[in-house]
Amino acid sequence: MATEKSEEPSVTIDGNEYLIKDLSDNAKAQIANMRFVDAEINDLQNRLAVYRTARAGYAELLKKELGG
Image 1 (cartoon, helix red, strand yellow):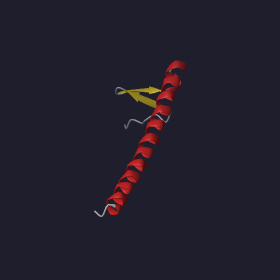
Image 2 (cartoon, helix red, strand yellow):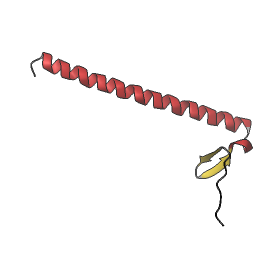
Image 3 (cartoon, one colour):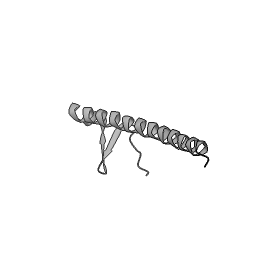
Image 4 (cartoon, helix red, strand yellow):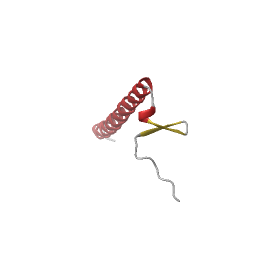
């Protein structure tokens, strides 16, 4: 008989899976904080990629301006 995965929301920490509904309010708050920070990190990484691309473009324009 195959084992079925729970359809309930869960989180895995250090290889241990926990159902969200079973966590304390404090644990749920920490998960929310981690998700927020993860989203912010992702946003910053995307912005950094844009800035690096822009910088490379400016460097190419400068090279052309200097005759290189």
